[in-house]
Length: 350
Image (cartoon, rainbow, N blue to C red; front, side, top):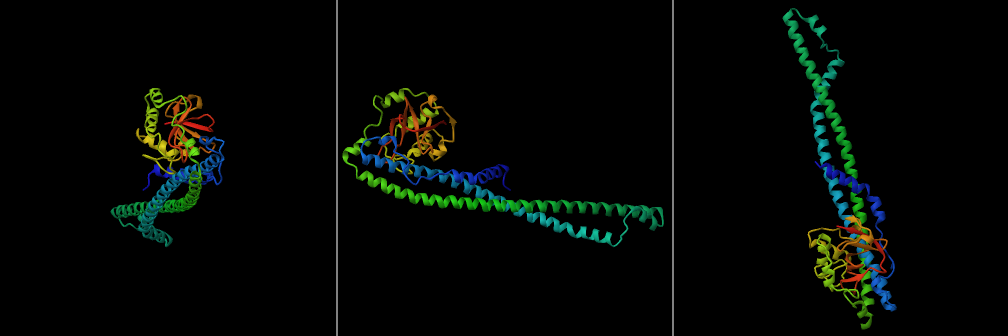
C-alpha cells in the first residue's frame, strides 16, 4: 500500500502538471548578447547572440529533465497505488462473495414467511423447557443473521470504495504517463535543437581572429581584484565554502551540460561547488532560482547563488564586491566577473 506521503506527492505533481508544462519556455531565437561579449566586433557580437541562445536552451533542457524525473516518479507512485487499490478491490469482492450466500438464505427465508420471533416460539412449545430451548435457538439464529448482514454491508461498502479508488488511481497513472510522455518528447526535441545551436556557436567561434579570441580570454578577474583578496574576505559558512571550492575551477572551459570536475556549464559549476560541501542543488538555473532563501541584491554575501535574465537562464556564485564567479559561455573559461551591466534576476542563499 502506498504511503500518504507518496499520495500527497503524486497529487502535487499531477495537479500542477499542466501549469508546469506551460511555464517551461524554450527559446528558439537569440535573446540578447551575454555581457561577456560587450565588444564592438560584429563577429563577437554574433557569437554572443548564438551562445546566449544555446545557454537558454541548455538550461531549459536541465529544467525539463527535472520535470521529467518528477513526472516519472509520479507515474511510479500512481502505478503503485493502482496496483494496491486493485488488490484491495479483489479482497473486498472475495469478502462479499463469502458472506453473500448466508445473507441470501436469510432473505429467502424471510420472503417465504419463516417465523423466527419469540411469540412463534411460545406458540409451538409444549413445555417451559422446550420454550427456553426454542427461544435460545432463535436468539442464536437472530444474532448470527445480524452479524452476517453487518459483515455483508461492510464488505459491500469496502468493495465500492475500493472500486472507486482503483478507478481514480488508474486515471492518475494514465494522466501521469501522458504528461511524462509529453515532457520526454519535448526534451528530445530540444536536445536536437541544442545540437544545432552548438554547431552554430562552434562555427562562429572558429571564424574568430586570434585577436578576437584573446578578448574572450582577457582576464580571470576584474581589474583591481585578485584571488587572495577574495579568499581573505570570506566569512566561514556553507556558501563561502562553496565559493572557495568554485574558485579552484577558474580557467576551466565552458561545456554545455557539463558538471565538472574540469569543465562546466553555468548551473553545473554551481552544482559542483555546492557538492564539495555536501549540499545538493537542483540541476537547472531556473530551479536554483526557486530554492534556498531569497536574498535582496543589496544584502548579497559571498557564496550566494545569483541568477540573471528574466527567465533565470544564467547563474553564478556571488564572489563579493559586486562580482560573480561563473561559467559564462562557450569560449570563455570559468572566471570572476563584475555583475555591472548584467541583467540581475534573483539571489538565493543555500
